[in-house]
Each structure stands twice: as C-alpha cells, then as structure tokens.
Image (cartoon, rainbow, N blue to C red; front, side, top):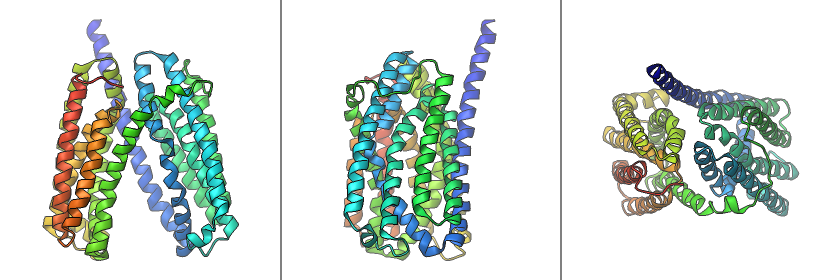
Length: 441
C-alpha cells in the first residue's frame, strides 16, 4: 500500500510537470502564430502607413507597464509561499492589499495620464498624419487604462500559480491574448476606428477579470476577491519589488545597449545583421525556457516548506537537463544558423561564422543564467543579483562604447564575457538559496 501511494504521488508529480511544459509550448506557439497571421492581414487591409501609426500609438502606453513597481510579481511569489504553508488567511490579506494598491495606482495614473493626453498635441508630437487629434487622445487614454488594469488581472491569475496550477495560469494568458488578437484585428478591418479597438481591450480585460474571479471562487474555498485590507501588507514588499525592478532594468539595458551602440557606430547594415542573428539565437533560448520555467512554482513550494534537499536535487536536475538541451540547440544553431538566416532573408543577410558562433555561445550561457535566476525570482531573492545585473550591464555598455570602432565579433565577445559572469553570479546566488543558507521571502 505504501509503495502504491508513492507511485501515485510520483505519477501526479510528473503529470503536473507535463501539463506545465505542454501549456508553455502551447502558449509560445500561439504567440508566434498570432504574430505570423495578424501582421500580414493587417498590412493588407489596414495599409502599411496606417498600420505603422497604429503600432506607434500602442507602443506609447506600453511604457506604463512598469507602473505596478514590480509588486505584481513579488506579491504573487509571496502568496505562493503562504499557500504552500497553508497560511490562507495571510495570503488573502496580502492579495486584497495588493488589489487596493493597484486600484489606487490605476485611478491616480488614469487621471494624470488623462490630463497629460488632453494637455499636449500628441498628433504633432508623434508626427501622426492618418488619425485625428481627438481620435488619438481617446485611443491613448483607453490603451493606458487597459495597461493599468493589467496588474489587477495578473494578480488574480497568479492565484492559479499559488495553487500549483501553472498550466491554468499560462492557458489563461493564452486565451486572453487570442481573444484580444482576433477582436482587435476584426474591428480594425471592419471599422478602422482605433478608439473602438482601444475600448475593446478594456472591455476584454474587465470580462477576463470577472471570469477569473468567478473561476477562482468556485475552485478554491479560501479565495475571495476584494480590496478590504490594509495597504501595509503590500507596501512592506516594495523594497523587494524595487530589487526586482532593478534586475529587470539591468536585463533591459543588456538587451538595448548593444543595439543602440551598434546602430550608432557600426551602421544600420551591421545592426540588421546583429538583430537578425540575435533573434534566431533568442528563439533557441525561448525553447529551452519552456522546460526550466515549468518548475518555478515547485521551487517556491519546496523552499517555503524548507525542503532544501528536495529543492536542491530538483534544481541540479533541471540545470543539468537545461545544459544538455541548450547545448544541443546551440550546436544546431551554429551549424545551420547561417543557412537559416540566408533562407529567411532571401540571401539579403550574410552572417560571419566567427561572430555567429560567439553569439550562439553567449546565448548558451544566457540560458543557463536564466535557469538559475528562476530560483531567485521564485523566492523574491532579487537584491544581490539585481544589482549585479544592473552594474554588469552598465559595464558592458561602457566596454562596447570603448570598442565602438571595432567589429561585430568584438561586440559579441564582450557580450559573451558579461553573460558568462552573470551566469556564475546567478549560480552562486541560487546555490545559496536552495541549500538554505539565506532567509527567504
């Protein structure tokens, strides 16, 4: 009987991991399909110039995505930890407190953005010619409101993660993305009214929030939506959230820094080669992330229960398999990458072999770095690694500037060097977490 129970437990564990992996594959595949399908359709029916201006308008409110100050991720992680310890009361208090904080941010943000939108001439500022001034203003207003609603919805969807249902969390995001893509595409084709499309985003977000709240209420007895909690529960996590934002900022600088300097000093032709090559290597990274990201919630649960031996064993197994998968993908990209790029760009872009090889190796260490970082993000341990990411990215930016008259190969070598040290730092930090040498959450 004991053996039977153990076998059932093992089967359930593997079943859960497989659900997470397949939902991740589904999520990423759907994202790619949506991009492949909607872009040519909108270009055909909307026109190149009109579609370009729509993309420009939608990109402006996207800068508000950091308005949650990183609280969404850190609060969700903390809730996961509390649920793992069966501390449902405190988890619910934190959830409601974060809802209240996001509601306040949304109301204040919407008012300030509304004033800024109608105070300035955005048609002239953005150099938009196909849309009228009021049309642009209302479009930006509703797109901004949509962005402000995202943390409230995201926090509710995060309850699925807290209940070890990462697959439901990912599927929820995918269905929402699909509905938004279909609705916006159809409305743009039929009406070409960007205000109606912007309002549809808000309505979809509200409907998904109501649907998510209803689903959670039926599935989990402890869950109850609300705002009736003291702000101090979520505010005390602001320092942790700040460290998370620093980590994201460092990663963003690492990505955008080379693009800026290559475009400025090596020219647009070299930038196209670099960007195209990195897009291909990033595809390999994305495939590897499907595997290791499926275990994030497991880390939170095991470490919350102080099951350090189990967490450590799982971490090293996941890192080893990620190492193998990434090595295979890296080698494959190195062998076939140049040919893929030639076919992809119809021989418009030729990639130098040494440069591409170094970039592939850089992508390999970046994958291992992200695998290790998943331990840190799943336990809100972003302080040290966040600072290291930030200052190492600044260091990379300075080095690229000093060697700005060099070649793409030199740029790739510098990127590889920093990626390697970031991986070492993440590994050391992760090791101290899974072995219980650091206080968590």
